[in-house]
Image (tube, rainbow, N blue to C red):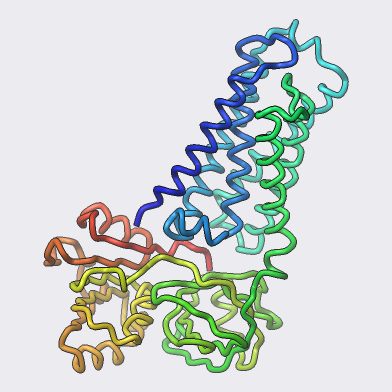
Amino acid sequence: MRAYKGILFIFIILCGSALLWYFSKPMAPIHPLNTLSHVIGGLAITCLFLVFLLATRIKMLERWFSGLEHVYFYHKLLAILSLVLILIHGQLQKMIPDEELTQQTPLNEFAKDLGELAQYGFIFLIILAFIAKFLKYEHWRWLHRLLLVPYTLGIYHAYFSSHYDLLQPSALGIFTALTTTIGFMSALYMLTMYQDMFFPYKGQISSIQRLTPEILEIKLKLTKQLDYRPGQFLFLKVFQEGIEKAPHPFSISGGCGQQINLTIKAIGDYTKQVYNLIQVHTEVAVDGPYGHFDFGNGNAQQLWIAGGMGITPFLAYLHTQPDKKIDLYYSFHGQDNVIYKDFLEDYAQANDHFTVTFIDTTQRNRLSVDELSFSPQTSIYICGPEKMIKHFKSAAPKKNIQWEAFSFRS
């Protein structure tokens, strides 16, 4: 699955920003280093606009990037790029000749000071965001919320320390006004409105089944129908004392209409809370579905590779009784981590177009591409840990392969 439209969107926005800053005329002649500094600073502000826009989970953007996991990848990439550009902009400002800097007004100086403060704020928060695996999920979310503060300071810095009149209705002025406004509103939306207003599916837990000492299946009974495609996932909010209220993503493992099944493994703070504390009749809210893991558009011959909890999207498709020829390789680490084994074995016995191979990595080596046999017409679907995805992506044929990596925090 490719994200060509999304990549093109980013390319056009960033190129447009660079060209507008480069070809616009400043209010008075400036040093070439100052011109370059403005171009770099403008690109940094534009990157941050894209960072906040991609965080909104707009369905159109998800389609352009062929999946929310790709949206998040470019969200992270743009955050890194914005930090690099901010640092370059700051260094270029220090290289501008002193005689040009003496022309600054008190308002310019104040805006410049705020720009430096914004720079330090971005550096601190983005670095913390990238070491977030050592933090609790709720703390990680607050770091992202705090990015709005240096972004606001950066916008003020751009408008009132710039040698370009951004308040005029020029091409640069209009572009800057649109992108900064959309960026600010996107950040504000995710900060204040998304969690409270944009979870349209309400319901409650109707059933709980603990499948293993770490894995449970919960069934949601929603107040209205959720139309999803097997292979998609949703964001779930649980309203129960002792369980974090922030939304978390889970693949849909079955169900239809108003009855949705989720299979959850207790591997993080949140999922451990759910496993230990969740109760029947607990109220929930759902946003989704998301994802472009589409079995229906695949060829008649399909090869499935599942690792651990990556089995869940395949289960949802099997419940639809597909007529495709499917060979499933299901890898897990120990018998305590295999789920729905009886269902898969019974399904294979009842359907001659489906085979399943179980791979316990405590008993043998991990599955490799060399062990697999498939024709060029085979559609390959992979779902599981990110390391497994990278292995098969690098070795399997690119034309027919689709993949999904569980890289969301739980």
